[in-house]
Length: 119
Image (tube, rainbow, N blue to C red):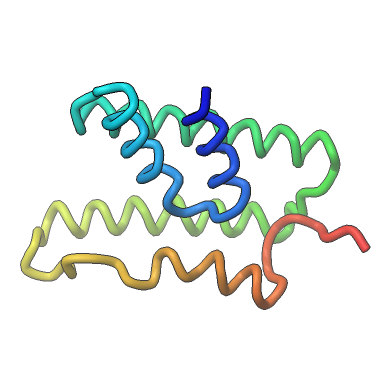
């Protein structure tokens, strides 16, 4: 229960990094190996994302004209990136993605996003 509460608070506050916190919780608190913890973290993230989507949809707070193109771009980018990584391997892929976690912070700072803001 405490790890679920921590995951929900992390997802709501930060977004990126929730899976890492879930893996840490699954390995340290529940004694899972990393592979099992990683799989469970993915399921936890998926459930959390669907719960958020249903909540925002039922509240009428989703801007579809922004959200749908962003979703399509994300899917296409992930497919192309994974195909490229599998074809080219480590020789062209950097060891880490420094810009990934900064994007949501920039969205929050500049007021960008797919959720309408109540005034």
